[in-house]
Length: 326
Ligand SMILES: Nc1nc2c(c(=O)[nH]1)N[C@H]1C(S)=C(S)[C@@H](COP(=O)(O)O)O[C@H]1N2
Ligand SMILES: [Mo]
Image (tube, rainbow, N blue to C red):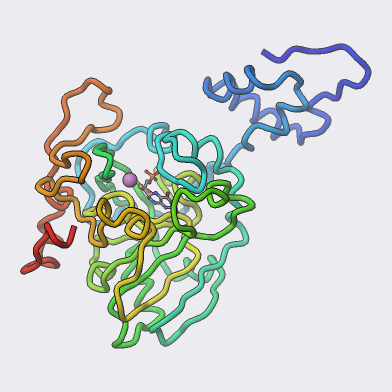
C-alpha cells in the first residue's frame, strides 16, 4: 500500500515519527480497513501519511474497577461497534466521523468548572474531580432517538456522589452540563449545526437518581475521545442526546436550563427526553429500535418505556403528562 519513491528528498516516516508510534500506527493501518482506504485514496507519500492519520489513542486500562449495581444481563455490544458508531457533532454529523476525527480533542490537562447554586464553586482539575470516587462497571442499555440501541459496559461512578461533594444550595433545582468549547480542536463548532457549546440538563432528582452516572471509561479502559473523554454523563432511561460528552462545566440552577437540542429544534427534542415508545418523534415512530450489531436486516425489537428502567425511575414522573413533557 505504501509506495516507496526513490528520490533523495524522500523522508521516511520512521525518521519523523517515534519508532514505537510508527510501529503501532502500521498495526493500526493493518487493522483498520477504513483508514487504510482513506489513506490510499488521498495520500501518496509515507511522510504525509504519518502526519495525517489519527494518532493511536492509547487504550489504557483503568485499575481497581469494581462491579456496580443495575447492570443488564444483555450481551454487551462489541468495543469496535461502540467506538465506531457515535454521535458527537463537534467532530462531524456522520456516525463514523467522531472515530475518524476526535483525535484532535485535547483531554489533558482538563478542568471542570462547578458553578451556580452551590457552596463550593470553583474550577477543579479533572484529577481532583475523580480522586475520591470508586470506579464501577455498569452494563447499561443505551437508546438513541434515531431508533437504534446498544448495550455498553460503562466505567464510572454515580453523579449523586459528585454532586454531594460540592453541596448544592436549597435553590438548586436543576443541573446544567456544558461541553468544552474549543472550535480550534473541535471542527464541528466552527459550523452552525447546533448552538455551541453543547449543553444538557437534568432535574435535581434525576441527577441524584442512583442510575445516573459520570463515565470515564468503557470495557475497563479509559474512554476513547469519540465516546466523550475524559468525562461524560450517562442517563440510561433517556434518549442518548441527554448523555453529554466531554463535560467542562456543571452549573446548578433554580430554573430549567436551555439545552442544545431543545434550542435548535424544540418541536423535536424536549427537556425530558425520556425513552417512551408511545410518544413519536415528529418525523418517525419511537416504538421500535434496531439493536446495533444484530445486522441491518434483523427484526427490530419493541422499545420499552424508560428504556427498561421503569422500576427505578417511573416514580420521578408520577402525575406528569409525558406527551407534554417529552
Ligand atoms: N458534546 C456532545 N455530546 C453528545 C452529543 C454531541 O453531539 N455532542 N451527541 C449525543 C447523542 S445524540 C448521542 S446518541 C450520544 C452518543 O454517545 P456514543 O457516541 O458514546 O454512543 O452522545 C450524546 N452526547
Ligand atoms: Mo442520539
